[in-house]
Length: 610
Ligand code: M6R
Image (cartoon, rainbow, N blue to C red; front, side, top):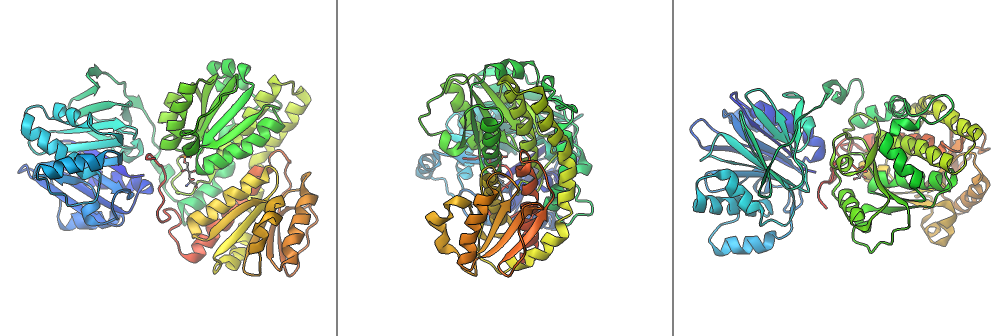
């Protein structure tokens, strides 16, 4: 989603703002802008369409020399990516605002402002907030903090916002409701951002605003209110590893992140399994109390994280013997849900800020589950803070919009969790050891699977000119096929769909001809023979098959079938292993087609609006 940065300092801050935006660019990159209060108390505002570099170039031509300012990188919701729709949005000569989220009652407020004579120059919902603040300030004119608080009480929807006023040039007012805002605490200077990673170059101390918080940030003071109540929020220290965000020798972040998987899976498993069993204490006391009660599991997530949930269902039902349901968060949150007894509610999210998933958690809390757990990659994120306990994926920061290492580390967590739940359901020590042996082998098998990179790059040439592709899998490989199709469409813009292979004959087979590549994942599992029959149906219709198969699965190359042998793994962990070649395939196809691999069009890394 969009990114916000701001600074109140004694030094020139335009460089800090632009560097912060660069670090947030993975969240939104249609357009960017900044507004800085100049030494003569006027607003110096620059807005550009395109990436942050364009803003940087514009600022070089028209340098902003002030010490207080706000900046924004945008992922368009209301209004096209045009200069007039970029943020900051202004009102009068004194008010500038940047905003993430969506104001749901903006039309009603806009009509009201139009009737009062305000002229709108953008199609954004944000401009209405600027005019409301301007109007309120004209009426109050004393305490800008209280002006902003009065205005936001009228807003419906989700927002994280930051606003400056040249009449009170020493402060920024920020507010959080449904979209995160942090304050970066410095020495004699303070900062604000929608994500702490924007501020890693200036501070390591952060205050996370809670829902409903409004704060006034000046160089040497921070005032926070929640409603009418003054509140105090403790700063936390975060070690944001700047090296981690460098691409190193890789061409794209996505490529780097694919190749990091052996290491991050090792990190995620470390301390959670020994040579023979699951180390449950690593989940924490609260987790153990809750897990002891669980008789049913409800998983809710979006996108790739939802696919991790779909794989997890096979493990929670197949290994742990507990019923498990998985749902897309944006559907769950608006549905009348019946909650089974002793049901554990689990959210999965790389970012921990996905608006639909967060709303689903809040709704679930109203319904009453026996506990709320999240599998997440960002410590201190909203989902982590609002859940009873979390099991973190130690994937490190994921920059590529297309999720890769976050997905496989989520699977690693669920593999461990399903063994822990299975033990409560009578799993023998001997069987536990077998599963744990498989897990201990996993990083090595992933390393071996990554060695397919050259062969898959070669194969990607077959897809360069294609417009569609079908992905097939059976059992726990079906969600893997779904994830493969999502990756391909996300970054190469090829239309791709996934089906359970047995479903082909019920409709999608009509699409198969020589122009439709069909990609199948074929580990040597109990459904292999069934899958082979389904693939015959494709061959018989002249379809071109690409089969990622276990070395022992017995596939032979022929004119209509290309086999890519995947290292042998266990049936338990095949879903993790078979994900890797599909990630590599989508990556190489996207590179071949010349798309923006790390920042695919129309998408954002963290969706903090509905
Ligand atoms: O941060 P989250 O895991 O909650 O994000 C959920 C989805 O938006 C995300 O997985 C999305 O589908 C990715 N771009 C997939 O690569």
